[in-house]
Length: 92
Image 1 (tube, rainbow, N blue to C red):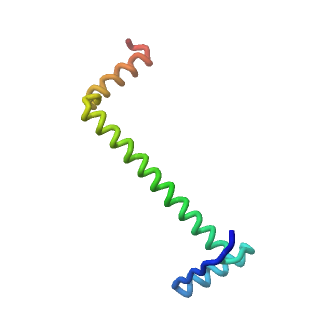
Image 2: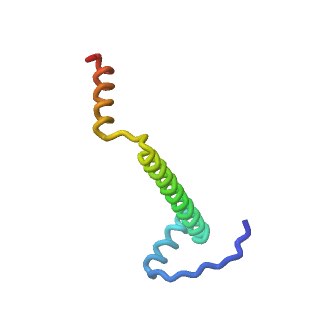
Image 3: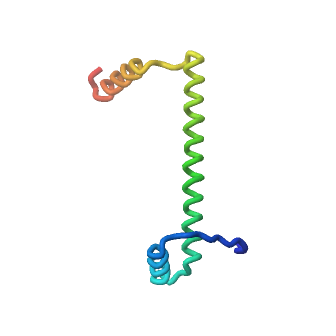
């Protein structure tokens, strides 16, 4: 991918010096390390946003289900699983 954009940023001199030193110790150009950090950040942010969207859709579907009268109470769920656990344990 062609590199045409220039990114300028301000940071503490100590941080710049430490970063440049570590990039050099890794035998990698600082710009390459920064590009990788930026790509990782973008990917993590997108994944977090996609997961949040997924959860929001699940919540909306659950709310619609409850509004349609298809939901069951927490007590009913607990009762069902008490019975399932007892059956699995051979108590029923």
